[in-house]
Amino acid sequence: MSRVVVLGGGFGGIAAALRARAKGHEVTLVDRCPRLGGRAQVFEKDGFRHDAGPTVLTAPFLFEELFALFGKDIADYVRIVPLPLWYRFHFQDGDTFDYGGGIEQTLAEIARIHPPDAEGYRALLEQSRKIYDVGFTELADAPFHRFTFMLRQVPHLLRLGAYRSVWQMVSRCVKHEKIRQAFSIQPLLVGGNPFDTTSIYGLIHFLERAHGVHFAMGGTGALVDGLAKLMAEQGIETRLDTTVTSIDVEGDAVRAVHTACGRRIGADHLVSNADPVHLYKQLLPRSASKASARLKARHSEQSMGLFVFYFGTRRQYPDVAHHTIWMGPRYRELLDDIFHRKVLAEDFSIYLHRPTATDPSFAPEGCDSFYALVPVPNLTAGIDWATEAPRLRDRVVAALGATLLPGLADSICADFYMTPEDFESRYLSPAGAGFSIAPHFRQSAWFRFHNRGEGPRNLYLVGAGSHPGAGLPGVLSSAKVVDRLLPSAAEDLALVRAEALPA
Image (cartoon, rainbow, N blue to C red; front, side, top):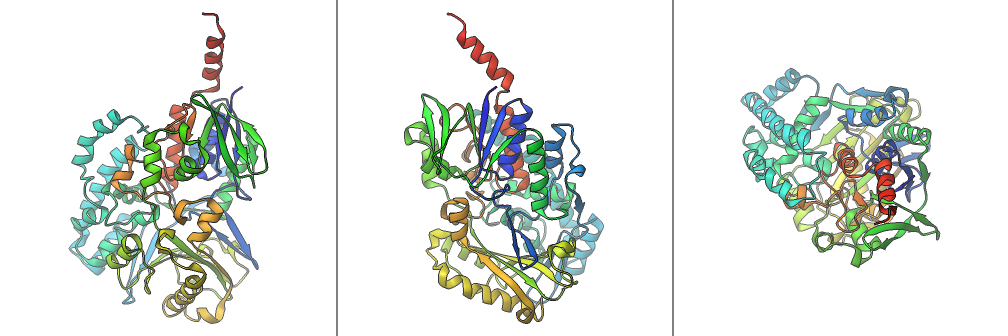
């Protein structure tokens, strides 16, 4: 039986491992973290629990598919619940905008702020649906490693206005600044600037409307645990706390990976869930990769960095939603500072996660668990995080204490934070980027790192840096692409037997 080695245990790697096992391969998954999940680690401190990775769960059917491969029901492994309110936007003037649930609720919220934009929202939703029908339904799990396939998509992309940015797409439909901001933040969920990111990523809006926003009870970590149980049941070998340092290539094929502890793991196929820039720069021999991959690795633009501040409170804030987007005083100008000028501004915007709004088990009784995620420049900015991180932490506490979380300075406890330096050291993320390479048009589809490796014939890529991109639906779809490319164990055996026949 042939062996598939999966390098990296993020959601893309987990999904690829399960799909390879369903095709009959022996599968070994290797990851440098202490538990599966990649960036979806779980942190615990003084009775408070925090999901470190993705907390916005959309398109749960992509997870259901993984269990169905083996005749299993996801409900027997983890409980996933829909959230009635997807996001609450909090603006500097104290106004809020509740987004989610039924379309009539959304229209009523829009009409409260700017009645003419209610009809514009319908037009935006219809445009997003058209993009979704092509960009997600037809192309999210389609291999884009052939340029001729990309050329065939050009008429569709032009018709859908892929040359526009998400901001331009939204602004054509709605006019009020607050509504425009609320409906253009989706690219930030996958590491992109709404003013630069192709409007193809506007499909996220309809994706949420079509499938809702959900939460796994027990957190994203509970979802990882459910997948880990399924992997164990199916005989997938998992090696954690293990860092791959190099890849052996003989001729045109990967033969093995080497780990920091000196072990060699043989492979008939290698699926990489590592960041593609790290893969092509640090792990593969230069002679084993194509010029296209080396060029992308050398010149790719990384997504923004993240400052993530985890904390508990000795009291509860029942009026704070599960997902809150705390909008700073500037929007376009702040994003320009983060993505282009590469400076750490004094102002900021925050994604505030309060899982105890849905699941009280995240904190001791009478307490709340939070994390505040602040988009910041990546490490190419040269920011001294040893100095700036404590200052930013204090500014976040002051801002939240003056608005959403009164008395925070007196009730905060068990706090700690991560900076882009932690993303680089823990996850080997180039430039400490939060979402691998940025989702510009010139780094999307065929221009993104290919799912079929650009080098050895038995190398495949999944995860945020490969097609179709970051975010849970993106990385799970990347594993579906690889599923279409990876031969089954039976096909491998037939090939070996054919090669063994005398000429």
